[in-house]
Length: 158
Image (cartoon, rainbow, N blue to C red):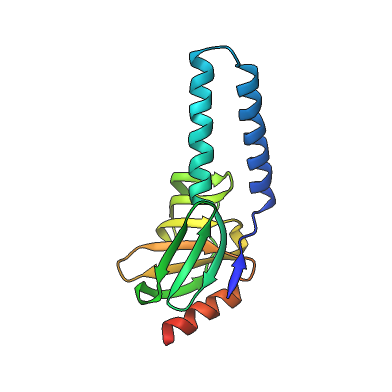
């Protein structure tokens, strides 16, 4: 089973506003030497990291859960997954390193209820919590979270 990650309206607005602001800044700083170069480096770093981590879809393949991202796919073997449950990360959670809306929510977060986790999600209301045997936790989302959670659980039981 494969299901796309849908970005929330907030993510779409933040992505658009930040990208337009950065591009406007680059155009307006043209010819400013060091300032222009610094803004270009910041823009490339931000967009590059977003392209590397931003989730596009989830796929419950035969032996692994695939988190498809724009530049790379992360694979989590089912043998490493202990449980999968629906969750709702709190908006008051702490982002330790990552994005709080630019091309989705991705990076390291800490939540009072969930604890520390790495997130790959686009909307709060479509999230699932994956608990791994090594103690790591991932929060992921897709447009059909209940069906995806069932598909993952069926692979865990096998």
